[in-house]
Length: 107
Image (tube, rainbow, N blue to C red; front, side, top):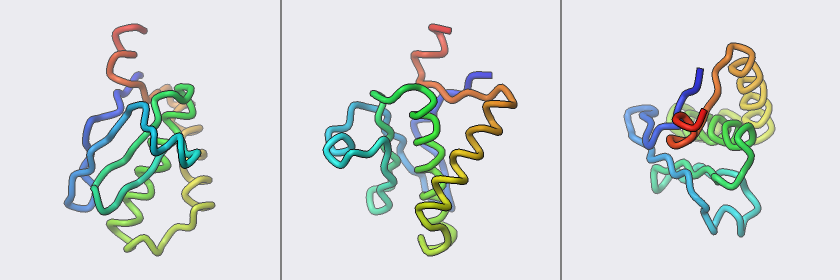
């Protein structure tokens, strides 16, 4: 089942905008994604391969969950990374695949 990465997601009573684009700041920082707490944004680099992009979306969403529910003190970067990778594997085995809006029609 293909699930479109949404344009926004509610976490802890606030709405985060999801930015899937060719983000120059991400590339400059060498990241595939970023959680921007103060701007209520999750940025995901669309230049990544689909699996990497989906894992980055989960990774940054976990950062948002951590920020809103644990004041950003609950999960280390290593824990977020491992949890996102594990969750990605489970979702993939269940047939759930995160895609960009235009990729649904193409499949």
